[in-house]
Length: 78
Ligand code: SF4
Picture (cartoon, helix red, strand yellow):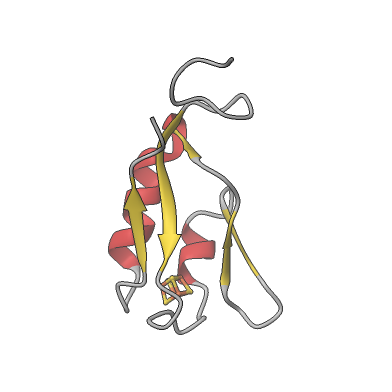
């Protein structure tokens, strides 16, 4: 079993969650955090797994920049 908080070799600081009804699919979050977020064919964000500690600050910046408060951080599973 892997150490607590680790999955797939990543030591996550946070995970990102999208509030789909609030999201307007403009893609700002993917521009700010391309390492973790891409866009689907309709422009909605696709979050690629837990955010490693090295990208935590950028993830928080992306959350703060979302104009519709549709992106949020959640604690990684224990
Ligand atoms: S920045 Fe916010 S509103 Fe825009 S695509 Fe990302 S989650 Fe959706």
